[in-house]
Amino acid sequence: MIPDQSIVPPLRVGLAAQRTPPPNVLVIFGATGDLTARKLVPALFDLFCESKLPAPFCIVGLARRAKSDAAFRAELRASAQRFARAKPDDDSARWDHFAPIVCYHQADFDSADGYTRLGARLRELDATRGTQGNRLFYLATAPEYYALIAERLGAAQLAPPGGAWERLIVEKPFGSDLASARALNRQILAVFDEAQIYRIDHYLGKETVQNIFAFRFANTILEPLWNRNYVDHVQITAAESIGVEERGGYYDGAGALRDMVQSHLLQLVALTAMEPPVSFDATAVHDEKVKVLRALCPLCERDVDDIVVRGQYAAYRAEPRVAPDSTTETFVALRLAIDNWRWAGVPFYLRTGKCLPKRATEIQIHFKPVPHPLFARVVGNGITPNVIALRIQPDEGIYWEFAAKRPGQTIQLSDVRMDFCYADSFGAAPGEAYETLLLDAMRGDATLFNRNDEVEVAWSLVTPILERWAQSPPPEFPNYAAGTWGPDAANLLLAREGRAWRAP
Ligand SMILES: NC(=O)c1ccc[n+]([C@@H]2O[C@H](COP(=O)([O-])OP(=O)(O)OC[C@H]3O[C@@H](n4cnc5c(N)ncnc54)[C@H](OP(=O)(O)O)[C@@H]3O)[C@@H](O)[C@H]2O)c1
Image (cartoon, rainbow, N blue to C red; front, side, top):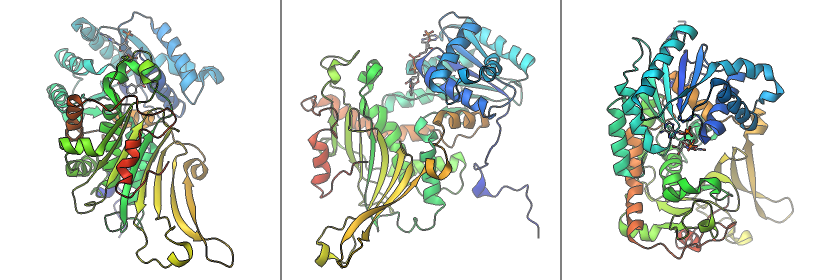
């Protein structure tokens, strides 16, 4: 019997290779800001150059400063020149095709009139450019404006004509603790349905993060090993070599726990530890991720004192827009436990920080030592247990480290690596996360975004740490020198359990 090609098997839902999104207008709130200049516009221009944007498609940049369309386009050209892969100066004709799809809308987030004028402009674009009433609102603004803009969008009744869609992308951070995340969810959900809301964590758009799905669920040999029977522990490191640079104002109010652990690192834990979803549609994937996050053992006050380490690098307090007596952490290390059948008894050690020796994000699966000391007589206890490492960035790839016999008449073992490197295997480094995420939101695929319960359960793990830290004085800050792997306490965290961090 010839299979019916029109039926998509459930396991392939969400995996369609290339689907051009339908026509739409992207409205960027905060269009004169840093995120738009460094990430969004370069991503959009690169997508345009690769013919991946829908047609028709328009971008409306909204911000407070008065400026003409021409001035706005000139600024965006300079940003694209600096940050996009395709350089407008190398091919001006391409930029000249792109520029007319961009326009500027001056408005204050708080002004009802600004939204009324926006509605008129969107209807005009639908009529003159054929964007079919579909709207994607991107909140590239400071977090305190998210709820206000959602509320004003609702009040302005910009709802598109029947059949068209309206979606909202909300930038990170989503809340600053459990209570504020819940409140923000409530406020936005009063206007938009969950299916319309796309909470961004740009880590999820990275090719290497998506490849965790492929590596784990498209390869038979891993599944029998990926559990407490074979895995000794997991280490996840997200290291930055730079300090806060110009972001001191934001960072000093946030810190490493909010900025990195609550979002990126817990996402990596969820993807590493989740069960295979029944399909790759958003609901199935979110359900499995939430199950892992719910299984993380909550931390009581004593746990926070014992298994969460905070650090601050030496010159932090002298950075621009950082308080001279700041107690903000620029480094966190912690030990998590997942209370479920697959992972009971397997510690997950997480660390992240600024001014560390290198920029590297890596997930390492450390396997148990061999049970029978067959080689002990010749090599002593020096056999290193196997490690599989997923290099999220840079040098994106995966390596497996195992023992091999050195050539020669005596038995001597060495650790060797099998290394898969994206750039070598696929001929190019992976694309930018924002490109993937923008297209997914236009297509209505929320798999790589955060659902409301996912954000809240991540905050429910992190909030007791914030509360404990607010009550107890920090250790002697600063407590680590730039260019080191954080305070000694981070090494002790593993050493007292007979383990050691392994540099990515
Ligand atoms: N920058 C990044 O790399 C990055 C990375 C990850 C996440 N994020 C998140 O992305 C969001 C935006 O960050 P950003 O760095 O782009 O911020 P930003 O540089 O401070 O930009 C803020 C934007 O908001 C506009 N704005 C502020 N108040 C306004 C008002 N009342 N009415 C209208 N426009 C107003 C500003 O326009 P005017 O200047 O014209 O007033 C500007 O366009 C933040 O939530 C941040 O956490 C940023």
